[in-house]
Length: 111
Image (tube, rainbow, N blue to C red; front, side):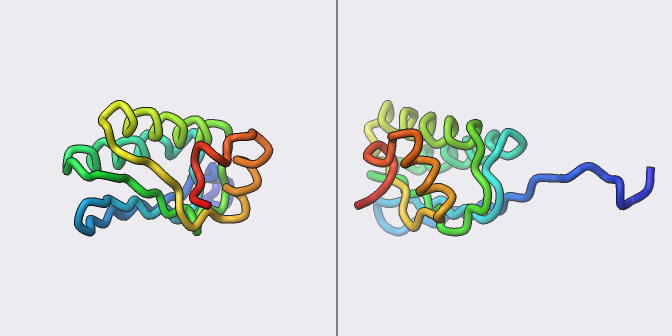
C-alpha cells in the first residue's frame, strides 16, 4: 500500500484551560467516531478539577458526525450529574447547523 493510499486519520486537537471556576475544553478539527473517546476523556479530566462549569469552545470544529453530537450530549449529561453547568461557546457553523437540525440548540449552545 502506498503512502497516498493510507486511510484518512481523524484530526482533533484538544486543549484544556482552567480559569477560576470554569474549565474550557478547546476543540480544533473533527469530532467524530474516531475522536469522541479522547473528547470524553477530556471532559472527565475537567470534572476532576471540580469546576462550577465546563465550556466547550467548538469554534474550530470542522466536522461533526452523529457520534460527535452524541458525545456532546453525553458530556452535558455527565457534567449535569456532577452538578456542573455545561455549555458550548463559539460554535462553528457546522456545529451550529447540526445542533439546529437535531433540535437541540437550547441544550448545548450559549445564546
